[in-house]
Image (tube, rainbow, N blue to C red; front, side):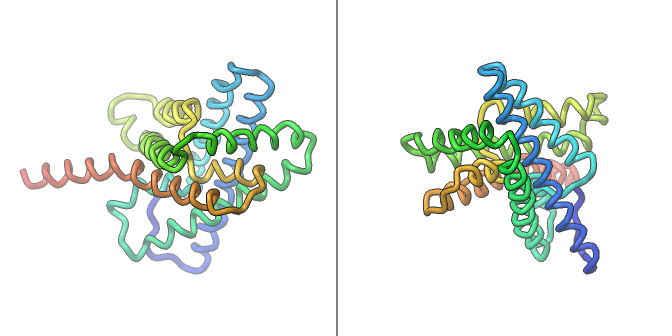
Length: 229
């Protein structure tokens, strides 16, 4: 997910479209994950995690624009380009929403929608759901950064970039950590617009930001220390 500094009108349009496509891919992989959990029981969680990981794999392969993937570039991103993060998230939401609408009009709806609703109900059932959301999102953000950076660093160590991309995603989905964009599918199915829903989304975004920039900041400090030597 490359940084874009100066963009023409066409480039901005492509950026937005790639963000929408990224959201669509997450919506589809999220639907597959929900379906597998419903149909396969406990074992379906592992299958669902693998199916969701494939979505991230293709997002990275085709260099689509995903908010949580762009977070890793914040330490080296000019402040004037921060708008890209906001725009990316909004159009990711649009992409997920498009898939949610399509799925709601298929035969999968009676299975997937209740399953998605139960995911959100379980999150709000936690006593301190706000703190849980924030902490869970931090861990998700950290794992997403490991995933999106794997194509850059894995080959240097003779490690498969594909494995590096997929495994962190499998871990975060299996553990149920909060991905601010992927969660939108469940919120669309949940169908509630309220203060707690908005609060949960904002906390997830903040947590993904904190977790996502942790490693890049450490790497940046390491690079600066090596340059001084």
